[in-house]
Image (cartoon, rainbow, N blue to C red; front, side, top):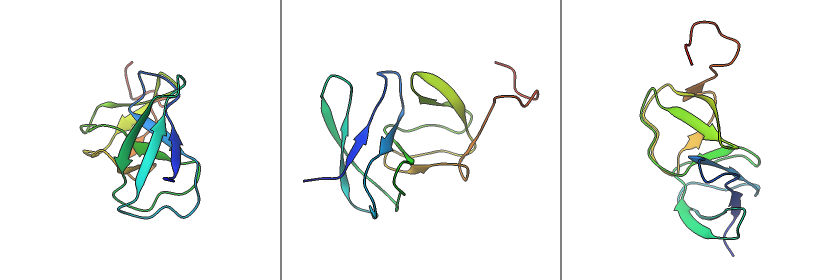
Length: 99
């Protein structure tokens, strides 16, 4: 059985991983709230509870989780990449980002 990740909203371009010690090249079953599953091969190790990209996200595009923008990509992100502070910035409370 593949490790599992959860896509919280149909709008999301990331999912949350619910498995320990997942390494590059691992297939992950990404489930949505209706029980549909898609498989994504991850490109790098991703810690439990962290985000993986479900689709290509270009530099400057919004990172969407829970159906809401949680930040902006600081570089191009490929499907299966680890999404965290090394490739995204928050837009909340900064004052230098216009919504």
